[in-house]
Amino acid sequence: MNDPLGQVMAQMNKDHFHRDLAGLLAIESVRDDSRQGPGQPFGPGPAQALAYMLQLADRDGFETANIDGYAGRIAWGEGEDILGILVHVDVVPATGDWASPPFEASIRDGFLYARGAADDKGPAMAAYYALLGLKEAGFKPKKRIHLIIGTDEESDWGCMARYFATEPMPSLGFSPDADFPLINGEKGMVTLNLTTKRVTAGPLKSLQAGERTNMVPDRAEAILTGDQAANLADPFPAWCQDQGLQGQVDQIAGDLRLTLHGKSAHGAEPAAGRNAASYLAAFLQAYLGDEVDPAISLISDCLHRQPDGAGLDLAFSDEVMGPLTVNAGIVDIQPGESRVNINIRYPRGLTAEALVDRVQAKAARYGLDVTYDGPAKAVHYIPADDPLVTTLLDVYRQVSGDATAQPLSIGGGTYARMMPKAVAYGPLFPGEDGQLHQANEHIPLASLYKAIAIYQEAIRRLTEKAD
Ligand SMILES: [Zn+2]
Image 1 (cartoon, protein in one colour):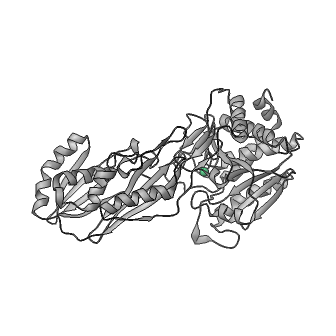
Image 2 (cartoon, rainbow, N blue to C red):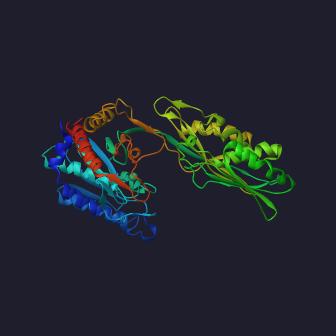
Image 3 (tube, rainbow, N blue to C red):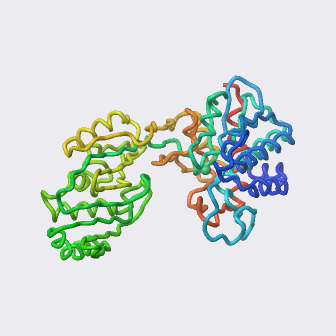
């Protein structure tokens, strides 16, 4: 294909694409557990969006299957192997100030605006039109192609748990739900609670920071009591200034309250933030000395300004996937109990068990216990020389014109990790933002068309031979 974009535009009826996508975007497919029912395990919206996609495919002569409203499949082609393309039609709620109604496709200055335009209805429809274009052009795939449609990606991925409980696992695949060129490495993840029972003897009553394990807390608050507390009021403002941070001191019902403002960042990139909890712990450790709680000492000694995990003996970096990272996302020290929640993202070459052993050894010195907060996620890595990766990268380079594009590794997790051999592939091009999960979510129409061309050529190349 010398001019894939030209060819796809010729084959594709743009008006039909816009009409079909607008219909999908109009469905408010936000999970609503209060309206669960038979065939709609996540409420009526996600189930409706799924039914809509399957109706299009029925109309266009594909085989379809609806897996109890959890997920669906649009199938085409014959062969032993299955190419899986994994998309989702649920969306996050449309909060915030929108310039146009969020559940209405609006085109302004070449951009398509709507909740789901980029995540993931636009890409889902692009993948579908790639299939349709190939079918109408008379292409005969030598593998089965399963366009798998999830309805619960934005919450717990329960759709995929149900789908793969009974449906066949593709032998290779991609998911148009992240970034181009492609993501072939996703770090493993372990979230841990470090806890201890607490007898309050010293001046610290409580310390609280953060609500989510995957965010760097940007605010921490400590309540102190007794004579010693008064001694902290004076040095705190100067200490904050030294650190380049904002802090406040107030009196509340005879107690002293210290509030510290840090800088938020995603938990996958803790070095980009300034953890308010760890800074406040460092201050308390410096000024209270032996009087400080063991949990505060642990934060100050082992977590403060050590996003690489060095303080927990976890520092490790892989040349392809980058460094291990540690984020202390939630700190909750109360009269009866202390809890420090840490989110560790690790590259290939490590295992969750080995990491947890090290954290346990370290925490034990401070008298803290370690427990898993949810199951660990393994590293997802498809080697750069795997034919899946080389083919998809080659197609991307050819269609985008960027001959130097390289595969990406990220700290987060994408839908691709649902399949053992799959990568994330588009829809966002380098430099595009899309305002995913925010007001005025959008995608350039030209990028959607380009994505169709890329998906079409990728599907053709991956299924033109049986093996
Ligand atoms: Zn998504």
